[in-house]
Length: 243
Image (cartoon, rainbow, N blue to C red; front, side, top):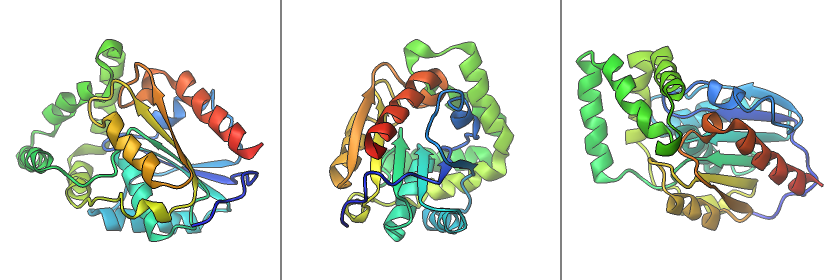
């Protein structure tokens, strides 16, 4: 895949939130983001990674192009899966707090246990249990924990079951990412408890037009912890790539 013109401006940005997250993880940045173009906030749909990627591709093909994608965590995994299916679909990408690798055995075991608990009606407890890992330990506040739990409760157990299906159907995308020519910013939090810096290094190494930025002190949901700094980092990257 050859390089895209650096001056090509995005007409539509699609934003895909992470597992049990809502568009709030992106709208928190809106007062600070200066990307230009229209914004389409969507949700993850489907019960497998391939289904979710196809839903995203269908949405992208209906938009006025050029189209850019912003994904966080599972949303970024779906974005990568869509991009390798159709490498020409996105002209720019921002991939935040994510992982291109396939599931580890211990992850599969943990998800199986979550499936069991969810089926048994324990979703309210699960929502609260998962929230602390979303934030850098030094940045956790009661308000952030409430937000993390409330986003999960907004989706409920049925969506959670679907998203667990997507997680369990993931594959290693690293060998496929080199075909994606979109200019790409990969954002990792130095204190992310879920997706480590080396996972993001894998993405930046695989994609021919990607660059990696480590957000010091940031956790998994950096967009909620410090929306201004996260947005300004994205703005700076976008200005450099379109000037």
